[in-house]
Amino acid sequence: MSFRDISKEALVGSITLGVVFVAGYFFGKPSKKSEAIFKSHCKDNPLLQYILNHSMREHPVLKSLRLRTMEDSWNVMMVACEQSQFMANLARLIKAKRVIEIGVYTGYNTLSMALALPDDGILVACDISKEYTDIGKPFWKEAGVEQKIDLRIQPALQTLGTVDLCQNSIFISHKMNYFKPFYLNLMIIAYVLWGGQVLNPSPDDLDTVAIDKLNKKLHRDTRVSLSMLTVGDGLTLAIKL
Ligand SMILES: *[C@@H]1O[C@H](CO)[C@@H](O)[C@H](O)[C@H]1NC(C)=O
Image (cartoon, rainbow, N blue to C red; front, side, top):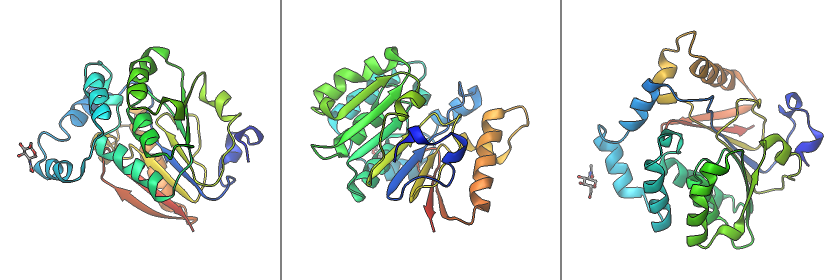
């Protein structure tokens, strides 16, 4: 099945089985408040430090890319490394052969997923920024996985129209503002806690309102069973019943 045949609205409830969907939500720029919360996510949390100390196995090139990304003023857009490792483990678990990622930024998660793919695996990476993805490219090469990464610099919808989903695909998106979530065997939706702001969404904070709305919608949806994890900035697993 190809995205080409499906209208944006009709994506709900229509997609093929056997596919993992990972959605993150970035609606424009993160607010100062969420930025502060993101930055403190580890420093003031010894338990999280313990978790990182006892579970992270960050590839040395991933680490270099993370440190390079921290020099960028938009580094809050980078996915938490433990969350990235979790997604890569899901790819290993379902023996994913294909990953489609929307929103690459500097390509930390792209590299992490590419490292988890088998030699014949392909990751189609969608972004409109050459500037940011250029930061990641040399690291993809250094890690020896650049041949698995098919970067398309154009609006994601154009790329999706050309990508066939197969069994054991993973769909990751960090920029889902124009998609309805669509129902695959397993959907993974990232950034569902939005720095804790979902507790108190102020009506003029459209990002938080949209995320809170999606969380409520998923909870009401009897077609899926749910787990909301506190990994990174929150990750919801929605499993099709
Ligand atoms: C985590 O590791 C760092 C570096 O080795 C150490 O300084 C810190 O105390 C450790 N924290 C926990 C809670 O394990």
